[in-house]
Image (tube, rainbow, N blue to C red; front, side, top):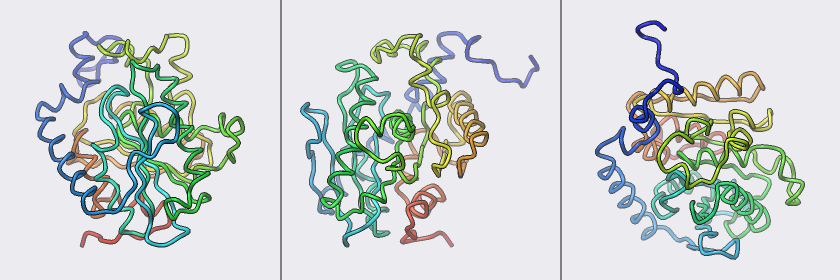
Length: 297
């Protein structure tokens, strides 16, 4: 292995693996970024009309926050939050809604029960149930159920990819193309190395089914347009996972925009997703058939 060749994760020490796969380790000032998320999100909830904590399933975690479009028949952005499948909820992420609303779309943020209360397989089932609920209740967001787009950050990016496969819709009574496009931001796309990181036991994922739960090995349907993004200041492994996923999407023929903003790390990129001045946000909006309300330049 050459001097500049990155070490494969199989050869990393436990400390190296934890740094690569724990944004809290890689971004020591993460509490500052989280504080900005929370302030921006609270402002949105005070300024924008929405219906919060609307149930789509029987348990406490199965809720959506609905921010309707100004006019009926709008495209819908369904956002899935991150937090290593174990932390956070939609209220930490409301900041992503205004860019969609100001461009003429509807924004729906999804919650789910967290691990280890439920295993990761149940989290995936729940977000798919939330997608079904949105399709059946699109008018509550002034939305068009034939214009559903999805997005997610970090673990939510993984869940967004798991909403993009074509192996569950028939069972739920959904059309195969219920999702018209996806924006996947700083996602975990191969869970095999995750099983080596402290806290992964909470996911209740075994070595036998880890690939079935990994988008790299269970990729989206090949006609689905995807915006794939990772911060240029993220760890090597996080970037490698996204690079590897891009290779898979190219091989399958997915129409894909790949973005790697060099100024973003794992936490700042969420603010970029909600800012229409960024290429990331404007690419997501254009995928939805919307024009960004503001553009740089």
